[in-house]
Image (cartoon, rainbow, N blue to C red; front, side, top):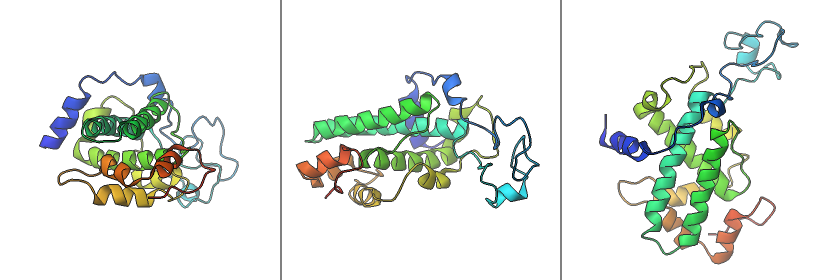
Amino acid sequence: MSTETLVYRTMLDHRPITPADGILRFPTIACAGNTSFCSQCRNCADDCANCAACRYDECDACAAPDLTPRTAMMLVIAGTILVEQVRGESSHGCTPVFHHHVTRTFEQLVEALDRGHRPQSRNLADQLCIHLMITQARELACEAGEVYVEGLPISDYDYGFHELYDTLLPDDEHDYLVELGTALAAPGTRFSFTALADLMTRDAMNTFFEPFHTDECEV
């Protein structure tokens, strides 16, 4: 196990255990909850994993789940790690209000997943944070995923993180923020919230946290 993974485990040792009833609300199969055959493809009421029609997206009623319990748990862990990163940066930066709001954004997204709800993109801050959570979760799942999801039900649809960039994010308006924060990150780190905040004007910072009916954030 790598040093980075050991750091992750240390960071999460004191985290409250995610309520199982929340995470377990996410489905493990397609057609979840259906008690009869699908009206369109008619042969996969229990799961669409082996249905040719569903495999090629020919059935609108049987979309495969993008968030399973294990996938959601990895997002929760990723969000928790990113919260700690933002808190660490806030002690060295000059924008404590920005860091506070980013921390709350991550916490609210994690809380939604803990309750079994899909995270919502209400503004650019949500979009950026969800994107970073997906990226972090992908890396963490490859590194030591079973460490964090042991005991959760297994699904054929686990860890479809690439699809989440489309299903959880309404568009790519936040992509330039990802690129900036990544490009300005210090050696050994993946993203710098402090550097991103330093580039923002006051108006841009306000827009970053406002609902999606305002002008685009300027950097």
